Image (tube, rainbow, N blue to C red; front, side):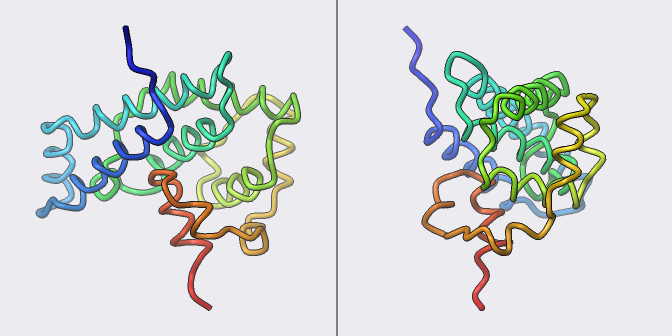
Length: 175
């Protein structure tokens, strides 16, 4: 009997990987090598895989999809030696994009996700090279600064893994 994977458990695993990365010193190359050798990158890939699985039917968790998309984007946007996110399976990253397409087509994307996606696309448009014209048009229409007025709060972002930590740092700065 397998233990069900939960969003909470995955967030804790993400933070453990981040702590491993933060605990390293040395050159960028040495840090990357150490994260591979210790299995931290393999763990981040397993976490990403679990998020993609939770985002797929029958669960179809929008929160899991948000985190899977974030991890895929963050891997291309921030050096893995600082985040612990690395060596994600590209078939899983593309699978998350397919689930994003399906969620968009069925009207399941919420305004929080739209605010996030607008920012992600503005920072690293290369990550969102999608072939679906409707999804591409949607992503192109998003305001990269929508997060500034969305109303993110620390309490709503806590316990959401690195995605939550990232959005606290971007959207919840003291005035």
